[in-house]
Amino acid sequence: MKKVVLAMMMMLSLAGTGVSAQETPQILGASHAMLREPVSKRYLLLPVQEREENASIKVIAGGQTVQELNVRLAVDKVDYYVPLDVQRFGAKDLLLDITFHGDRRFTGAMKDFLCWREMKQSDTFDTANRERYRPQYHHTPLYGWMNDPNGMFYKDGVYHLYYQYNPYGSMWENMTWGHSTSRDLIHWEAQPIAIEPDALGAIFSGSCVVDKRNGQVVAMYTSAGKSQVQSIAFSKDNGQTFEKFSGNPVLTSSEEDFRDPKVFWNPEIQKWNLILAVGQEMRIYTSADMKSWNYESSFGKELGCHDGVWECPDLMKLQVRGTDKQKWLLICNINPGGPFGGSATQYFVGDFDGHKFTCEHQDTRWMDYGKDHYATVTFDNAPDGRRIALAWMSNWQYANQVPTKQFRSANSLPRDLDLFEYEGQTYCGVTPSREVDALRGKVVKKLPKTCEIVVDVKTTTEITLTNSLGEQVVMRYDVQQNTFSMDRTRTYASFSEAFPSVTTAPVYGSIRQLRIFIDNCSIEAFDAEGRLSMTNLIFPAEPYNNVKVTGGKATIYEISE
Image 1 (spheres, helix red, strand yellow):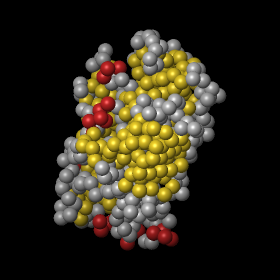
Image 2 (cartoon, one colour):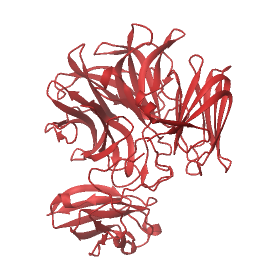
Image 3 (spheres, rainbow, N blue to C red):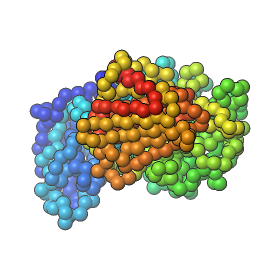
Image 4 (cartoon, rainbow, N blue to C red):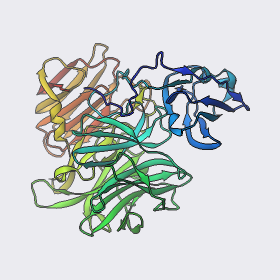
């Protein structure tokens, strides 16, 4: 599959195109330096060394600070480069005011740091994929760090995906909204950054809605400065650019964890609803204009898992399969507290009257029983009334340490959500979106690097993936225990002690068919009827090239581009 194409045309190799910085740094103290940089090309390429501490950089033009960012500037080794667009400031030269935070007993004297020699200017930035673990058919950023999916909506045949993004390194920092678009939920095209930090702080997670009455797209997000507050921005060009509301913030609180607004139009009350994560509960608000919000109720203090902070909520009405009933699903992501450690997605089923959510069950329920499924939210305005979800395919226990450098993190395959009944209870159904079916290529005998394996289950079934190095992943459907498990304890995991794991899920009814999607760094397993979902990262030293199935019959499909 051709990977995403950057709209800003950053395509040529760094080799031979860079112009080294001409100025020498002014050393102003043990941790402070300034560097004057004449602007001759579009980008200043900053050398990154991930083991170092962040350096704080103020970009100054004409005596005014025009941008602030944190970068792990290289001290004695360059892991990769990141581009700072310097031409956009419209200045002939810039002053970089840099404060280092590393311990000089270990880093040495600032004047000898490698970053001074390795900074380059270039009109291009290389985004060619050199990562063996970059997924073939999952969304990833071209470069840099990505976590929570944000602001997802559908309009005029295009799916818009925003995401928590660090353009200046492949570890969490400098939160902005990155942006990608797709017409089929599989092939994604990178777009320019959508929303950047401002005086109110970094741009944390949030949502977008298609405001049909006013002919615009509205983004609501958390501004994370000294405190976390909620802000809005408007787009008149289908989400390509946003203008921030001059009256921001529109919602404040004295609570420390106050974030991740999910907005939706509720036709039953003819108002906008907002559900917001606050500590270990969700708060619900109403508004006529998304600028003034009225608090309605709180939910969750005595329900679900409370081993970590609640984040990234979503709330929607869904049909119960095979019935004429509809119920509400409240999605609540939590970190830590997942069933196998770290982050995960829990959910609640119940009723919502536009003002208060009432849960109908007492047990804790997980949407996905893998270790790498978090920050799950759905697209606004999806066609045919569908509820299409994406998750961040990682875990905060090791997200910054996974063995990639050019980029970190991918999104899950798109999944359609619904509800189903089992033994008198209602559960969330999770099914690979129908767009995923287009990936199926020809049937093959030998296991490719990336594929879909369909297993027709006869009895207790075991699927084992192996390579020539003895690494393996074992999946097992146990008919007697009514469970499905995935064991990744014998795959490459030296980057984190928290990575080796066996994840086990309950199965609500008999499984007749399993769908297993393998990409370069992930396995996603589903019951074909949508009653099981398990998402786990894998980093084998070489691709799995053999599959053994007992208790069932496997059909292997190549991935078609």
